[in-house]
Image 1 (cartoon, rainbow, N blue to C red):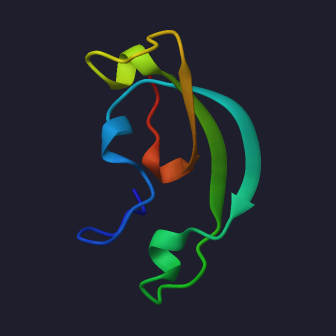
Image 2: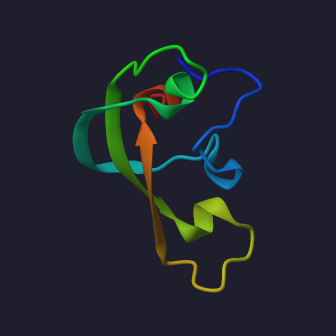
Length: 79
């Protein structure tokens, strides 16, 4: 996992540990978590991941809605 402990991350807390589905691959991009700490660009695959609102929040206003997030590969694990 390339995440820098104690640093800023672009993974919203409400999505951490939740199950989504990859809907688009953007190819490798600069991994900001590394780059911001002066550790180099560390390109990593970037994906658009869709999550059901009902899987993210206990009482969503529209449970059938989806939220999409662009997430780096090191934020993801196989479901």
